[in-house]
Amino acid sequence: MSSAPVSMSDFNKLPTDPNVSPMTIEQSKGSFWSSNPLSSYVIDTYNQVQAHRKGLSLVNPGTVENLNKEVSRDVFLSQYFFTGLRADLNKAFALNPAFQTSHTFSIGSTNLPNYAFSALFADDNLFVQGNLDNDMSLSGRFNYGWDKTNISKANIQIANGQPTMCQLEQDYQASDFSINLKTLNPQFATKDGSFTGVAVGSLLQSITPQLALGLEVLYSRPQAIAPADAGVSYLTRYVSKKQDWIFSGQLQASGVLVASFWRKITPNVEAAIETTLQAGMVPITDPVVGTPIGIQPTVEGSTTIGAKYEYRQSIFRGIIDSNGKIGCFLERKILPTLSVLFCGEIDHFKNQSKLGCGLQFETAGNQELLMMQQGLDVDGNPLQSMPQQA
Amino acid sequence: MSGPMFGMPGMNPTGATIGTNNGVPSNKSRFQQFKESPAFTVLLNGTLFVAGVTFIQSPLMDMLAPAL
Amino acid sequence: MQFLPSFILSDESKERITKVLNLTHNLAHYGWIPFVLYLGWANTPNKPNLFNLLSPLPSV
Image 1 (cartoon, rainbow over the protein chains, first blue to last red):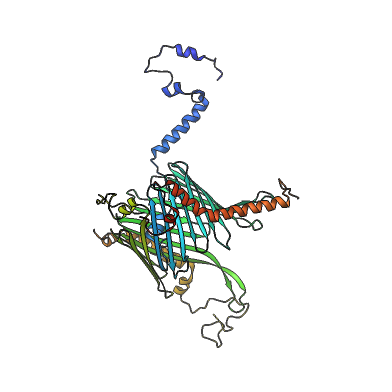
Image 2: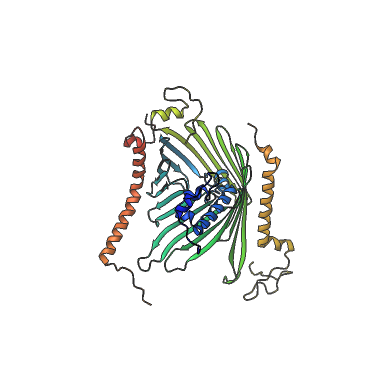
């Protein structure tokens, strides 16, 4: 800018045609930063990149946590499976904001407590849930959405005689990428400020409207005296153009490779397959003396294929596993307020079986909801469409 | 493999003694050796995955869906 | 190499910190469910009473 300075007032006195302006409308409206050639170059480049990014019509790839949600949570049984007998008594007090309590009784189960009480409250941007069982162990969740893109989450687990677990999480979902930062039992020593606990950071970025690639970095230091552990996991997710099938893959730092595939066949039938390969090292011991003489790489693998059928009154899930396991889960709504659950699993290779039966009651905390559960409105007239039950 | 009491044909005559390399028994066939290697697990599960995906994507799966 | 802490705590204040931590722990342990119930209760149009909140039976 060595040329002679020209004052702005002179420019403004120039006779200009409204259609041919020496400055674009944006420039004349702009402040110092957008009229300055150096910064305007930066701003223009940034806008160009942003416009190009928008032009790629990328969508948010979803969170890392939900990378293979369709397979492991929707189709497979692991989320739903239980053993023994159980009864759930859910009581809804309001639908919007949602508020419900639930009493769960269970016998003959190894992992379910005999009795548990849970309460849930969900608002447009707040989700609070607590669960307390007969051993007085508590698990609590607290999610708060600051806006559409930012969600803070906190999980806490307190059990008698066990260390307390506390997890803090921050989710950021932008137009074409998601960032998740979480930390488990974070502690900073008062002495030198060194960190103990687990910290995980992950990024999932859409590359094309279909394909997303991601990276997860894990840093773990359970005790201040022990050396820290770190690892990187690689993630990928591909959603087909018609969104009717999804492939996802993960290569985890611990040496686990997970590949999964999901397809929606009709609106009420879904099928999925997942293969897990776990690579590890197993020490070879001398067959006579029993002293280790070396290590040997081993790979354990399993493939599970499953399907989910959704009928008007019932949901059926079934899986077959390459380790000889066959499992099913059946949920049938007998009355609008009562459903029956059945789940069973047979392990053919180990000759083991598991069985679970359950009842689920839905009750209401007020007159309006009670009538709604029966398919009637407040005055006792049939509703036009059955409401979605929580 | 515990040390055999009697010499078996095709077996290391000293049995599996201390210090000697346990030794892959030579009576195992090629296939059996391959079956115990990690590559077999990888190959098996890879094949199962590809076969499963092909099955799910095939019209056969469409036929398994009931027309309601 | 001697690493000096940025602040030095006396035994009493250490004890106090432990006490406060324990209190928070207990508060979270036994106060979380009441907190959720209160949030729900305060946001429900018909304020259900405590018995209705805790009983599994329909309260109509």
